[in-house]
Amino acid sequence: MTIFEKIIAREIPSSIVFENDDYIAFKDINPRAPVHVLCVPKKVSSRLDEISDPLELGMLYQTAIKVARGSCGLTDYRLAVNVGVGAGQIVFHTHIHILGGWTDLDAEKQHQDMAEG
Ligand code: 5GP
Image: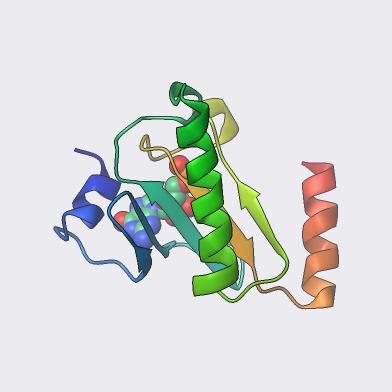
Protein backbone atom coordinates (compact mmCIF):
# COMPACT_ATOMS: atom_id res chain seq x y z
CA MET A 1 0.00 0.00 0.00
CA THR A 2 1.44 3.40 -0.95
CA ILE A 3 1.42 6.34 1.43
CA PHE A 4 -1.20 7.98 -0.79
CA GLU A 5 -3.50 4.95 -0.49
CA LYS A 6 -3.16 5.33 3.28
CA ILE A 7 -4.15 8.99 2.95
CA ILE A 8 -7.16 8.02 0.79
CA ALA A 9 -8.16 5.41 3.40
CA ARG A 10 -7.71 8.01 6.18
CA GLU A 11 -5.12 5.78 7.82
CA ILE A 12 -2.76 8.75 7.94
CA PRO A 13 -3.86 12.37 8.23
CA SER A 14 -3.54 14.96 5.50
CA SER A 15 -4.94 18.34 4.66
CA ILE A 16 -7.50 17.48 1.98
CA VAL A 17 -8.60 20.32 -0.30
CA PHE A 18 -10.73 18.32 -2.77
CA GLU A 19 -12.20 14.84 -3.06
CA ASN A 20 -14.68 13.03 -5.25
CA ASP A 21 -15.24 9.35 -6.10
CA ASP A 22 -12.18 9.15 -8.35
CA TYR A 23 -9.65 11.74 -7.14
CA ILE A 24 -8.28 13.29 -4.00
CA ALA A 25 -6.15 16.42 -3.60
CA PHE A 26 -4.24 17.33 -0.46
CA LYS A 27 -1.47 19.67 0.64
CA ASP A 28 2.08 18.44 0.15
CA ILE A 29 3.77 17.73 3.49
CA ASN A 30 6.95 19.43 2.27
CA PRO A 31 5.72 22.40 0.23
CA ARG A 32 8.00 23.75 -2.48
CA ALA A 33 5.75 26.74 -3.23
CA PRO A 34 3.33 28.93 -1.20
CA VAL A 35 0.58 26.64 -2.54
CA HIS A 36 1.64 23.04 -3.12
CA VAL A 37 -1.13 20.47 -3.54
CA LEU A 38 -0.99 16.93 -4.90
CA CYS A 39 -3.77 15.71 -7.18
CA VAL A 40 -4.03 11.93 -6.92
CA PRO A 41 -6.23 9.44 -8.77
CA LYS A 42 -7.74 6.89 -6.41
CA LYS A 43 -7.29 4.18 -9.05
CA VAL A 44 -3.78 2.94 -8.38
CA SER A 45 -1.02 3.25 -10.96
CA SER A 46 2.59 3.71 -10.03
CA ARG A 47 3.59 6.38 -12.55
CA LEU A 48 1.95 8.63 -15.14
CA ASP A 49 3.12 6.66 -18.16
CA GLU A 50 1.33 3.57 -16.86
CA ILE A 51 -1.99 5.24 -17.62
CA SER A 52 -2.71 4.18 -21.20
CA ASP A 53 -6.29 5.43 -21.46
CA PRO A 54 -6.28 8.96 -22.93
CA LEU A 55 -9.60 9.68 -21.23
CA GLU A 56 -8.12 8.79 -17.85
CA LEU A 57 -5.09 10.97 -18.51
CA GLY A 58 -7.33 13.81 -19.60
CA MET A 59 -9.56 13.44 -16.56
CA LEU A 60 -6.53 13.57 -14.27
CA TYR A 61 -5.34 16.83 -15.83
CA GLN A 62 -8.85 18.25 -15.93
CA THR A 63 -9.20 17.50 -12.21
CA ALA A 64 -5.82 19.08 -11.43
CA ILE A 65 -6.89 22.25 -13.27
CA LYS A 66 -10.22 22.28 -11.43
CA VAL A 67 -8.43 21.91 -8.08
CA ALA A 68 -5.85 24.59 -8.96
CA ARG A 69 -8.46 27.12 -10.04
CA GLY A 70 -11.32 26.16 -7.75
CA SER A 71 -10.09 24.67 -4.48
CA CYS A 72 -6.75 26.55 -4.48
CA GLY A 73 -8.05 29.78 -6.03
CA LEU A 74 -5.08 30.05 -8.38
CA THR A 75 -5.12 31.77 -11.76
CA ASP A 76 -1.42 31.16 -12.46
CA TYR A 77 0.08 27.85 -11.48
CA ARG A 78 2.44 25.09 -12.51
CA LEU A 79 1.41 21.45 -12.98
CA ALA A 80 4.36 19.07 -12.63
CA VAL A 81 4.74 15.32 -12.76
CA ASN A 82 7.87 13.41 -11.83
CA VAL A 83 7.98 10.15 -13.78
CA GLY A 84 10.53 7.73 -12.33
CA VAL A 85 13.29 7.89 -9.74
CA GLY A 86 15.64 9.64 -12.14
CA ALA A 87 13.13 12.48 -12.44
CA GLY A 88 12.69 12.79 -8.68
CA GLN A 89 9.63 10.60 -8.13
CA ILE A 90 9.59 9.31 -4.56
CA VAL A 91 6.00 8.17 -4.15
CA PHE A 92 5.01 5.49 -6.67
CA HIS A 93 1.35 6.34 -6.88
CA THR A 94 0.66 8.64 -9.84
CA HIS A 95 0.12 12.27 -8.88
CA ILE A 96 0.28 15.78 -10.28
CA HIS A 97 1.94 18.55 -8.29
CA ILE A 98 -0.02 21.82 -8.32
CA LEU A 99 2.32 24.68 -7.45
CA GLY A 100 1.49 28.35 -7.21
CA GLY A 101 0.80 31.36 -5.05
CA TRP A 102 4.12 33.10 -5.72
CA THR A 103 4.65 36.81 -5.62
CA ASP A 104 6.09 38.32 -8.81
CA LEU A 105 9.61 38.18 -7.40
CA ASP A 106 9.25 34.58 -6.23
CA ALA A 107 7.89 33.63 -9.62
CA GLU A 108 10.84 35.19 -11.39
CA LYS A 109 13.26 33.17 -9.25
CA GLN A 110 11.24 29.98 -9.79
CA HIS A 111 11.34 30.44 -13.54
CA GLN A 112 15.09 30.94 -13.43
CA ASP A 113 15.52 27.84 -11.27
CA MET A 114 13.42 25.80 -13.69
CA ALA A 115 15.36 27.07 -16.70
CA GLU A 116 18.61 26.15 -14.97
CA GLY A 117 17.25 22.71 -13.99
P1 5GP B 1 7.23 12.94 -6.04
O1 5GP B 1 8.64 13.31 -5.75
O2 5GP B 1 6.99 11.45 -5.92
O3 5GP B 1 6.74 13.48 -7.37
O4 5GP B 1 6.35 13.67 -4.97
C1 5GP B 1 5.88 13.07 -3.82
C2 5GP B 1 5.45 14.17 -2.91
O5 5GP B 1 4.73 13.60 -1.84
C3 5GP B 1 6.60 14.95 -2.29
O6 5GP B 1 6.52 16.31 -2.68
C4 5GP B 1 6.43 14.75 -0.79
O7 5GP B 1 6.70 15.91 -0.04
C5 5GP B 1 4.97 14.34 -0.68
N1 5GP B 1 4.69 13.46 0.45
C6 5GP B 1 5.40 12.37 0.82
N2 5GP B 1 4.83 11.80 1.90
C7 5GP B 1 3.74 12.54 2.20
C8 5GP B 1 2.75 12.44 3.24
O8 5GP B 1 2.75 11.55 4.08
N3 5GP B 1 1.78 13.39 3.23
C9 5GP B 1 1.73 14.39 2.30
N4 5GP B 1 0.74 15.27 2.41
N5 5GP B 1 2.64 14.51 1.32
C10 5GP B 1 3.64 13.59 1.27
